Image 1 (tube, rainbow, N blue to C red):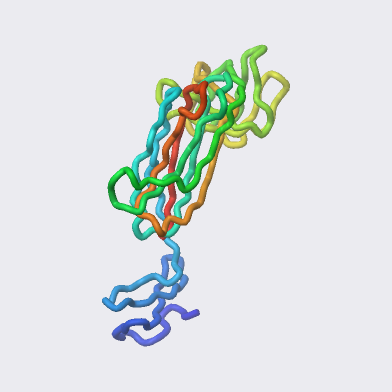
Image 2 (cartoon, one colour; image 1 turned 45 degrees about the horizontal axis):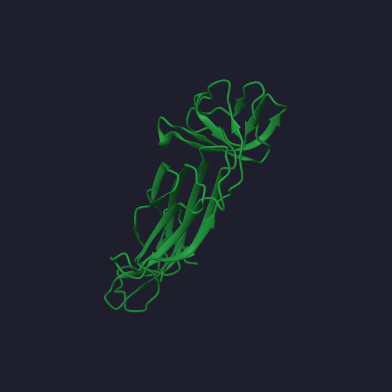
Length: 242
């Protein structure tokens, strides 16, 4: 691998000729020049964190919500991150909420959307947990009211913040102390009041897709998937790779 300052300077680069570009960490990466004289990366991966395709929001029972559309022209791969939370301890009907990742081969029009992947959420009854005190941002222990349901170790719980959906939060349970409290694997990003609804059976999904052959990408939240549906919370984000 070339070292800093190696080679001759002020050379004219020709089509197909190999050169090396120095990154900020001091490493060198191979680059090529195309027929128009433009420098192209050769195996250098660039990841772009996109804005959320669907900001955290409530999705009413028996409805569908569609995320914003992301152009993936020139993009090779996309990682889709889906966060799902319950708003009731009751069970769904035949099946739970469905998340469909859809792609299109055209730059516009709605009749070209096709399902590329999908995930189906749990439908069985979950636990509603009542905290006896507020938990500040950075806090990791949740004290519950006497006699309330308490999640099990390893459960993912969802704080359904009805005042501000953006302040809702997902947490994983590290340990449980009898029927009095439980500890989270990671401390809270946002403070949560004791009257914030807290439910088990929250779910996370991460899907990595080859999107090079398509032009557009979106995610549809299908909360109309069974005879009995309940309100949920959804959040969808994406990272792309050039």
